[in-house]
Length: 88
Image (cartoon, rainbow, N blue to C red; front, top):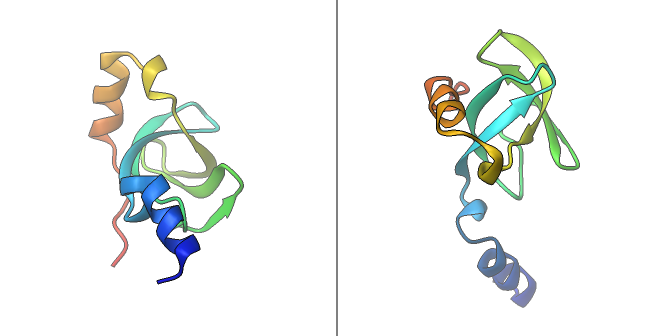
């Protein structure tokens, strides 16, 4: 493993493996998805956004991570009720 790879993994922590994160689609629906710093397991990644299917309203959308400190408990519970489809 190269030094750069080692530093990047240390800096990212759990994000290197993919962590469950609350995201918001362009229609403002909240749901939970696997978010990895290195790759998108969905369709595509565009900077801090991903293009994937929203499980709330069943549409394709750009999604971004929701700021966890700005979410209410009700929003967290709503997001937990909707998870994207697992790959593999």
